[in-house]
Length: 102
Image (cartoon, rainbow, N blue to C red; front, side):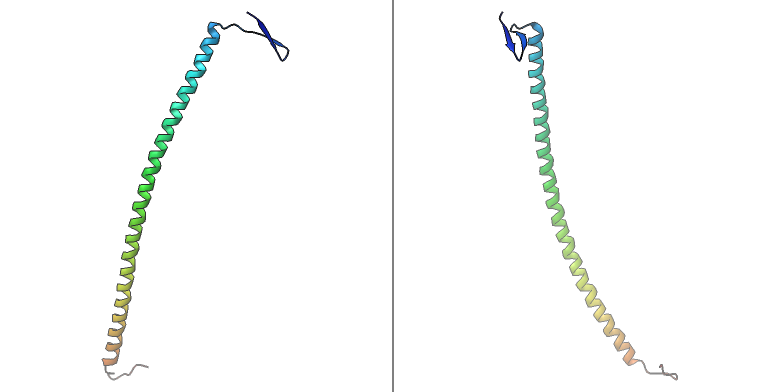
């Protein structure tokens, strides 16, 4: 075989069994790495989809809770108004007995 000169070094241009095994090992390693990364990407896509679904469900629940809280607030305000009316009525109907309050 012909030796080749590259950057001042003599390179032998023949292939040995070791060279072939090294090339195969590198190709197999790259292929396996690609497969592992691809599987991770696919799994991540599935996880993202699940999380988006969960976020939508939580936002819906949040809206429901907010509506219920608003209704409860209105109910409590109405109850406070009624209690004030009852308290004013009771205060106005009580006749002073012997000791007027100052």
